[in-house]
Length: 304
Image 1: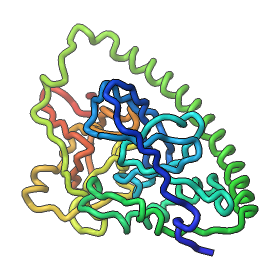
Image 2: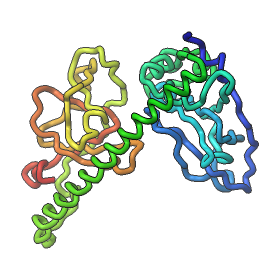
Image 3: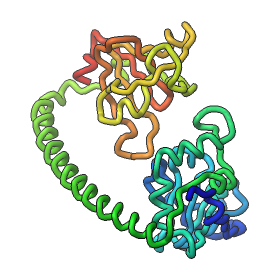
Image 4: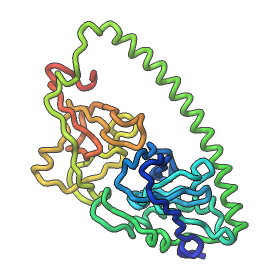
């Protein structure tokens, strides 16, 4: 049967008034089903919030700001006793009808995030918010507990094999990076006598378009984080936007430009720089990226 999640999940928040003299270890939720993570602690009342939610090991957590893109997660013993801002309501399963591990997998599906997206309110991707009711009225399949556990065991067996494959791939990629970095260092090691700041060869730089194209519009490609996540520009699945002539002039990339990742949930990706190079059509860029326009008489973008 397909049931509203509220039939087997209930809001369960442990509200704790802020003590300005206390230190609060804080937790956040990563988007796209990637789980919880530790944030910087709040010390000496350094926050505008007047209360936090205290997290239990068996809570389910939703981000009101980014739940529609998969910022949903199960808690665990390592996070018990830590704190969430009021933007992260917590819930508890009816253990007689819902296996929480099954809930964790069901809510990691993009089609479930789509359900939440349709219930979000507000304008623009970065301003949409969810209420607890939006989560509780969303629907999930609810087989028997024994069937839920069988499904979870099967998924986790597959997930274990996938993670092992990822581990081996990471090891191989690390070896490749070490070989490449060594070769790159040898090529550039003799050039220190003519070092200069990047800024000395930069004509201008700017953040990109803040409006998020819906993806169903006609117009130029608007470059996103997803298009540069591999360390180079890829337009295998481009998103287009309806831009004015002035916006196109303002945000179009040239082949001699660089783009840098301005914001990302992964520290290793923030600041990543890549050359634009020749593109088949007009390409603009959104505000997750910075365009760096070079003086091409001083610095070649591919070399940079």
